[in-house]
Length: 337
Image (cartoon, rainbow, N blue to C red; front, side, top):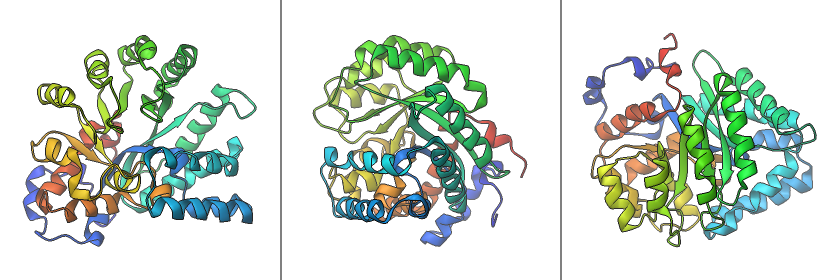
């Protein structure tokens, strides 16, 4: 690598960061990615290598549509199209390894990759085992990938139980947490609380998409009941949730480009998490959400945050360093330099 792993360097060197940053400089920083969905993150060149011409044409068409801006709910159907391309466990595994190499090329040293359990012919556990094989094959001396298993608010209690059972079973092999995602206004998360609390008691990390829609009416209940380790997006937080978070500063996973492309915000500096988190010096991480779908790298996200003028270069680097400590697995910090 071009610089030492910053995880081994004291924060005092922050003062040496240039007062004006370029994207190329940011690319050289060691970074962690804490909010990334596998289905929206496969490298495009990998998909091109396995897709038919017709599938690739449809994918490019949908990507262009999202690039031009779509409403929140309109972005979700593209996952079905990607699923029709990556339609076997072997393709999922190869795509996961390709993603690991793509992340490492951007100087990402640790990534938590989210995916729900699937049955692609041999059962959900076999699918998970295949993912874990990909994680092992994708890991290098400089890069550590881990898995978060995703549930949706409308998942059944039985689905939640199976997911938590498998997460606990494979906790020592690369599963580090549970993610609650999907359209945030669909379903009732309350019946899932006992299983999520069981996962948390077993030492798994819990992160919940919160504040993706102004129509969410359960934010305070989720925060008070689950006390998740992190929350995703934090765009449309209620006043009650904001007040609670001032007392219990749970880190937010900020995805600026995602929020722009699905019309949560109109300008990057309008992201509410900037005023609630960045200006209050509360913990947050910079993330991509779906780098394929939103055509963005983690370095791009840091550069976009810097362009808002909300924080300076030194503070941006401090955020980059501090986000390591929000990871659900800290073992990457002990890797040899």
